[in-house]
Length: 242
Image 1 (cartoon, rainbow, N blue to C red):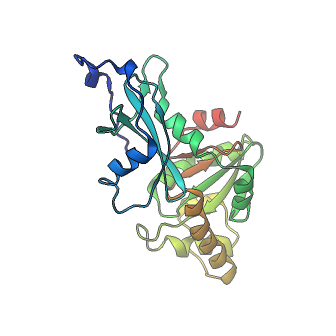
Image 2: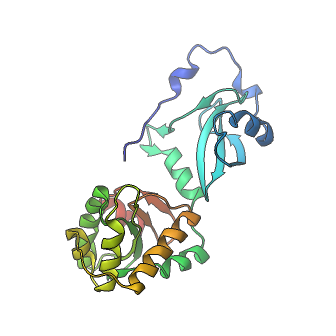
């Protein structure tokens, strides 16, 4: 998944505004302004507070079951779309904040247990939300398989076919459950029989995951409830479960 990184420092060079004297706009006022951009979407401004970069305000937007983050200037007139990167610390501060905001509660983690198609490995547990026909998911699965085989992690796989993108993915997901197949078969693109049990489990995942703010594949969910979408390498995965 490609992500745009915008460095914000240049916006403030030569500015004569004294940012320290300005606060952040009130949530209700800011919502009225943002309605111009999000007129077709129901959303809520959960909070507005100073961002890590002077002169910017962090805006948390709740929509469709998840929390997103953007930035505005102190007046609330200018929207800044991008990510704040701490170059010296080599940290994506925006991603860290979004991950923390969307952390799943223990109760929601229990909901995921009922959606698991199969598990592999032993050790710290990771949920993998995956689509049988998603190419990025294949990369994620191939990274996870040896870690599970070596006993470094336990992967709990939840099949989430995105039918609009992959019309045959649902049939493959159902077949994997019906025939009791595992991660290797998933990677190979297994196709098999259909059954009611498999269909019900896949349809339950399709109905439940968006309510938890999960709409993309691959998505990892770690023992502490943190969620990250996109492909992580082995080092990153092991670091997340320590």
